[in-house]
Structure formats: C-alpha cells, structure tokens
Image 1: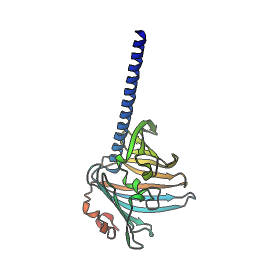
Image 2 (image 1 turned 180 degrees about the horizontal axis):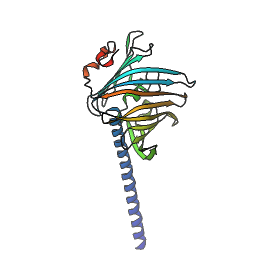
Image 3 (image 1 turned 120 degrees about the vertical axis):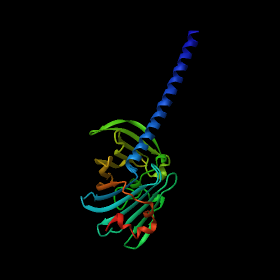
Image 4 (image 1 turned 45 degrees about the vertical axis):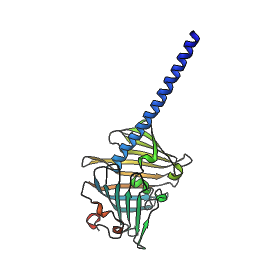
Length: 273
C-alpha cells in the first residue's frame, strides 16, 4: 500500500511539474511577443504620422566618414498595420535626389522602390533584398521600416539594467531562418518607453555580427523618441550613426504622396529643396 501511495505521489508531482513548466514557457513566449509588439508600436508607429530631418554618418575601419542628409515622411494607415514611408536624400551631391518609397503591408510582402537620379531609373527592390544595405549604410531596408511581428517567435529570457534603464530582454528567432538571413536577435527593451535600447544580431552560424545601440532619447510632443543611434558592423569594423535633427508628429501627411511616380517628382511641400 505504501509503495502504491509513493508511486502515486511521484506521478502526481511529475504531472504538476510538467504542467508548471509548460505553463511558464507559454507565459514567457506570450510575454516576449507582447514586449515585441509594444516595442514595434513605440519605435515604428508613434502617433499618426511623422516628418523627420535626419543626418547620417557612415564610418569605415580607417575612420573615413561619409555623410548624408535626408528627410523621412511616415504615415500609419492603421496602428501596428499598413504603413507608408517616403525618404529623400538632400546631400551630398552624388546622392542628391535619390529617394525611396516603402509601402508596408500586414500579412504580405512589402512594396519598395528606389529612384536613382544619375540614370533616371526607378527600381523595384525585391523582397529578397530587404536585408541589403540601405544607401550604403550599416542599416538594412528592413531595419528602416521594421520586421513583421509574426515572422519571428519571441521569448522573454530575462530582465537587465542598461545604464539608467530597466529592460526586458527578448530573443526573437525567425520562423524561416534561411529566408531571414540570420539565426536570431536579442532585444533590450526599455520597460518605461518600450523603445529598443540595444539589439544584437546573430548570423546563421550563431555568431554575433551586428549591434544596434540607442544613444539618446528625447520626449517630443509627449512622445518618447530615439534621436540618436548607431549600427555597428563587427566583422567590417565600421558603423553608421543616425541623428534626428528635427522630428514633428501629426503634421497632416496624406496618403497621396506615397506613389511610385512621385519618386521622380518629390512633394516639395514636405521635402523642401
């Protein structure tokens, strides 16, 4: 009788342990997905629209610097859903007039075009090229407009402090790693603002190859906004620094400016000279 009772207790404890482990794993997955969803909304979708004046510094391993000045227009069609971007380069002279259009779609591939004024060519950017360099920088097209939440599995793996910020640490693993071109990413997400403070990118072999870091956050129009950040290419020993010189929210941007034909004729009321 005692033996039967002991076996029954062991079986019960194993069942409870298995249930608890499964439940905790499910909670971690859900918490990770929730944290990433909040981050995407805070970073890529603040307010209804935005106009940003941006400077970009690209620094190679020899310390040589290339600088760019650009304007970025963004319009959210739906919160956390479809979205449009128009990016225009003002300087230097060799990229002046170059522009990009991104129509971001929820649940299907985004549409991306680039205009090259030197040869007067509008080029469609293939979906397979979304992880290639954006305008020669260490950011990719996907870094600029974001990656869909459901393309990856998100796991909350802990909490850490970064300087004065208390962060959730989330591991995001692509559901199709061969298509994604990387094995996973680790995000340090500020619990207060939901903004990403650091992102580590690991290649298909699991080696760290690229690191994003936020350097400055300011509150603009009651909206926490990243105003300075860097992306470091560890293998190439180079980095790109972006600085938001001016950011304005809810300025009345309309959907009619996000058209392929306007890449050659930018909307001067928004872009300027």
